[in-house]
Image: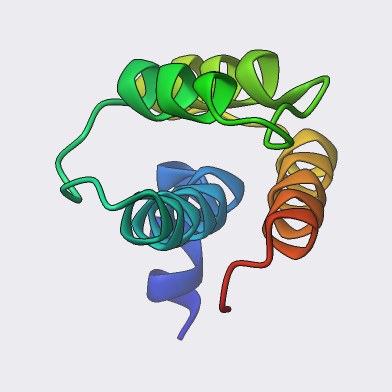
Length: 98
């Protein structure tokens, strides 16, 4: 258990949790928009912005920040939790099934 705990600590548990939440959110959003699950975040953002009533003030910035942070694989736990909360809020506001 200690070895596994050390592995998660080195790997970045916060980044792993954020990656799971982000992937799930992207899947739900792409399905709702009728887009393939392989659609890029830029494609999802562009499609969202083109739909009346689907514009969310911080959506594009949050998606881009999360994607950049996940590429680095190092995310501070408080920031990861904040982003996961934002994704949950977006999902609720957009009526995505969770």
